[in-house]
Image (tube, rainbow, N blue to C red; front, side):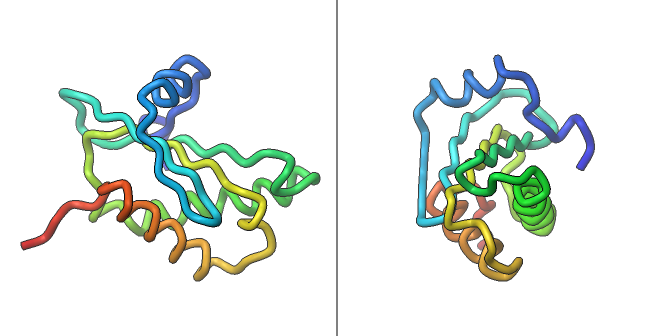
Length: 116
């Protein structure tokens, strides 16, 4: 994922957190913030040490989240910043379950473009 598609700075993370538009399920918490005059969405991912004590375990989860979001990219709204916070239940599950849970929470957050 290109750098222009990422929420990286602490200041940007805090702006999204302050909007208080959050949606959750058993594996993920998603914060959203609408933006004006943008070309595409931006994604921020946070995986704490509660998910995995070792760094490679957290990277494993982040990669699967990022890949799932890339697969959803054609269906996602382009005018939002999205933060995905992984909960400890996201550890040691396969890609299919991560993708299903992300799709569920994205639907709750109305992040998909409605097709007629």
